[in-house]
View 1 (cartoon, each protein chain N blue to C red):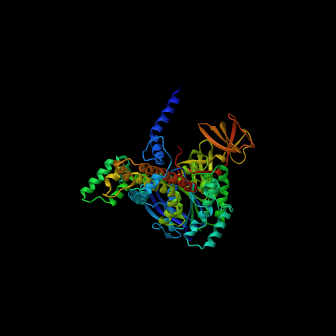
View 2: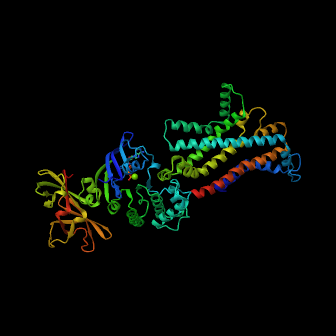
View 3: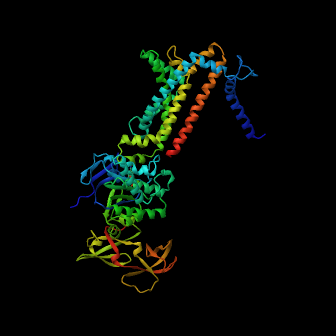
Length: 261
Length: 363
Ligand SMILES: Nc1ncnc2c1ncn2[C@@H]1O[C@H](COP(=O)(O)OP(=O)(O)OP(=O)(O)O)[C@@H](O)[C@H]1O
Ligand SMILES: [Mg+2]
């Protein structure tokens, strides 16, 4: 057997190891019986129905959506402004600001989570939804900044200068030229922020106030009590959302991008 | 006196401690086509961007139509700007690109449509309004960029190497086209290039720059025939520069004893700043040296002997490098009459009135 064949087999094994459990969860979510075991006794949407009837889970979904949407809105706004400042302007301490903005992806999330919590303690502020939101903004911001920055570098300055020379004020130029050309990146950044926030558990566990659950923390809580097939169904829904959204986003961004290249 | 369209008064541009433009004063007459010509890095773009308002001069004053504009931001200067890379708005159609400036001037909708159509017709792209820039060739994109800049009827049209991204044939066409449009509209134009051919063909006035300074400014013939400095002589076309001694000056003529060619008499306007008894530099354009077979009748000029060392064919003309004593001269001649080859002995002819002299010693 050649080396390449070995590498191929090894790759397949690694991927199986990673994705088989996910596939099992998705499969079992359609299982008719109460106890997750193979062979499956029949197909059913029963567990999805139960999800729909579970008030706690619906509440968690609402919290996650609200949190994700607010995180996306705030991160994108701040991220676009930060990227503009970093790419288009020269100011003192630019490298420092850039590093600080990107740092949250480099620091382990647990460390970031504890640090923010300790800081809040120090300020003697109670945990709140606002804190949770703040935390999510902090660690989604780097993604938005990086994506928007990359696109902004590709927008030639002379296109903006042309708009200025034609009589558009700097603000009009931003809205008529820069923003439309940035749109695909802004959209992508927004989706990143939403899915990362929607997915997050580590930071959320530290920051969430009592009584508030997001979908991931809800799953975590349910797992501690029992292994209900509902969790499989919930897992399937999560997978569809967190994989499907970025794919959809990428498709839309590609269409937007094709027009503006 | 008529007011110049653009006036630069002692403008200076520094980047940190580096001086990109040394004190420069320049007047651009209304309706003129003025070219800033010079090698890469000499400060052409910097000067143009200061006129445009994209850069603030470190010192000095800029006036457009007699009004000081140092404090006026670019979008209120009413200028047309064309860039080397077209800089069209990629997310807008050709018609929308051209209409852009009119929108911000509050022009009525039907007037916009009419003026856009007129501008596109002027640049000979009447049917492409609905296309996106990426669907156009480079030459077409540059025409759109030109249409977009002139449709707003700017006080001054500023062009920064607008032709240099185009291939050679297209560049020739666009050169003619641009000149035609400029002439037709009578629009004051500042054109930046490092291509001397472009500058000579298109300009009413050429401003030759080097290392942030103006070396010479004047009509093309003047700059070409009577260069003010050795830099100008070498930068515009191929020139031979020979050492000479000034035998006499005054009485409406300057007499030089030049290396190899001997006694040459020039009218004073071709030998500015050359005083008696001093050394001078004799500037001879390569195409003013005529080569002929040895022994041919000398005609009305000076004839000396030389030997061809190298031939560089350039289509209709050839550039010959000819050895005369310790000097190598360049001669550019048509090749239909006397195609010479390496090693041929030739007679080199020169009419003194085709030369110019500069003060200082040749190096
Ligand atoms: N923003 C800047 N910071 C520092 N130096 C600069 C800046 N812009 C230009 N320069 C310098 O100023 C000098 C003149 O530049 P400029 O762009 O005007 O040259 P140019 O004549 O247009 O050359 P080219 O034909 O290559 O376009 C160059 O030496 C350049 O390095
Ligand atoms: Mg330049």
